[in-house]
Image 1 (tube, helix red, strand yellow):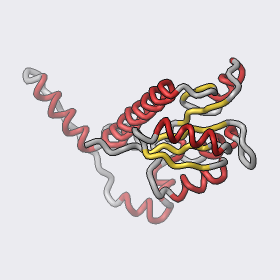
Image 2 (tube, one colour):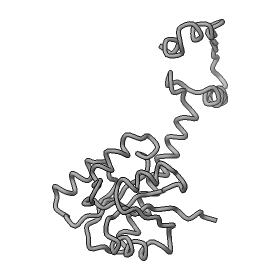
Image 3 (cartoon, helix red, strand yellow):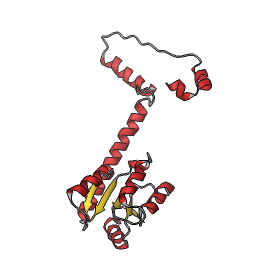
Length: 192
């Protein structure tokens, strides 16, 4: 059973939010914010995990560009795909929107099928990116960028199995009482 994805619609126009909710409600859980400040507050509370954001650019209090700058500063929020909706569909606007970190761009007036397809695609791409990042975290040490213990064991086992006619020497190094260095000088010094 698929869990319904949650989409945050950020637009100062009640009419636009209503139209988008009508388009999306059968496929997504839709939550709404009327400006960037309200959207940031909702995202930071994390009452619901937001899978994608549909964002208007021109809004009072905090416009779409400022909102994009704010979420880029937060590692968790910056992973949420953002689709920008705007009345301006010229090349310069599209370029600026994509440079700001948006994943996609849809001009107004809305085409329901296009919005649904683009939303489906950005959510799928973000999940693939998340899986790749998770795989990287599980398989590589963040400090040394070498294999994690489990990845090293599985890679070594595969190497031995694939090369039964070769001889290998394994060397294991361990620094006795390394915790003392971290205790006296701090983990940053120990990591260096």
